[in-house]
Length: 352
Ligand code: NAD
Ligand code: GLY
Image (cartoon, rainbow, N blue to C red):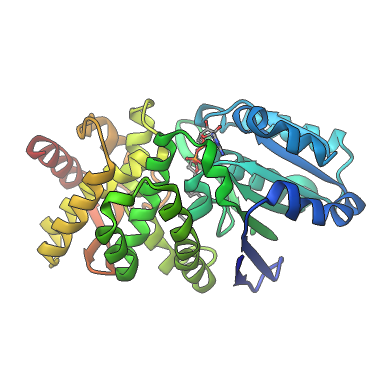
């Protein structure tokens, strides 16, 4: 078992991240008397519920199940969940347990932040992506008006319980999605980068992935501790995401993690055009991305660039803001005029 703490100036005062096995049958069982005393509800999605319903039902807490998938990360799901929380008589002292991937974590976290102006949330991430990234750090959101994560809040979970046993039921594609965020962390941390390169043949191995989850959480937790509300440094966790989010909206068949990988690939090449970079390092990073990413590397650059103009990270009209890799463990913030950005995406796509 490994535990990490994110110390905060706001409430909660800290977020505790526990990496351990048997979370449903042991950790939550141990927590049950406290949870029942304050009132609690489990929020999950249809896939996770059907896979784990025996253990979920054994907890004997009210359960709300959303349909699985990014297309349901909507205001309708959020409102239906809030209604279920009200009907379950949750109170200020109650806890919402978000049991699922990043979609459940984001919607559940947002509902917890809104209900009675904020109740406790426990994140139980069941995908690789959610364990290494989305459950940690308190970002919550729904997609709105065709923009990814347009409505959201910072709401730190009181606990995150990361259990690698959940990986046993994950389809291989979901491992690739999680690897998208892991490669992003590696682009920010030289030690993890070297480890991934040295273990290229093990990237889809459950044992190896379970071993590197705590390392990834530690990388993210350290950044979140320094800048919980993304006033500066935390923006580095958006590496690959400006382009990635835009691709996600145009290529509905691709998942978030796959789009992050594709975004990282393009933004890696954009960095070389505009900044003094370490070419050999960026070549190695690109080869790592290509080890994980499969399928067509091209997309509608015009449409993606138009959508990137609406990204939350942009600060000036007609410009696109990016966080790009430059050297081993280093990154830079880059602001591009729309015309330069669209030109770069088109040319990179042609050259791939
Ligand atoms: P997801 O939640 O859609 O899960 C992917 C699929 O795996 C779903 O079909 C789900 O039902 C299924 N699943 C979940 N756990 C399973 C298990 N143990 N066994 C079998 N199937 C399982 O997607 P995701 O990749 O986990 O998360 C992507 C979302 O996370 C995006 O909406 C993205 O915007 C968000 N995100 C948020 C943050 C943040 O900081 N808040 C960071 C990164 C990504
Ligand atoms: N996934 C980006 C962040 O948490 O800041």
